[in-house]
Picture 1: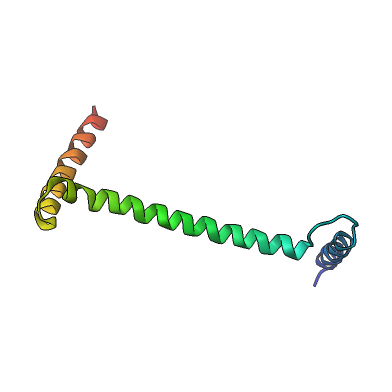
Picture 2: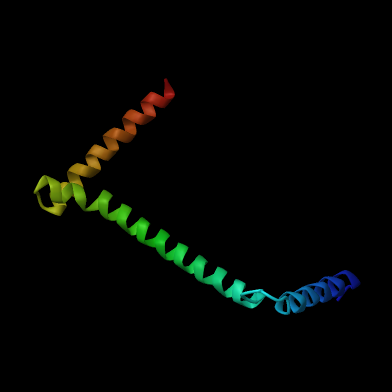
Length: 94
């Protein structure tokens, strides 16, 4: 370990120790880190739910609204998407 690493580690330890002993401090540094982990987990879960919802809307909703079987809809939807992509490609080229 270099001298810089040692000093950085000691500074971190000292700051944690002082923060834990400050009067009126409602939570410790470790509590803050735990709360941050919890927030990150909730954000990831929310993002996953949003992605699943978006996929459901894009993949399932057209079939339900058209009243046809999912196989028929997927064929027609795929052809429609290819037509839209071709149109967008042609627009971008001009």
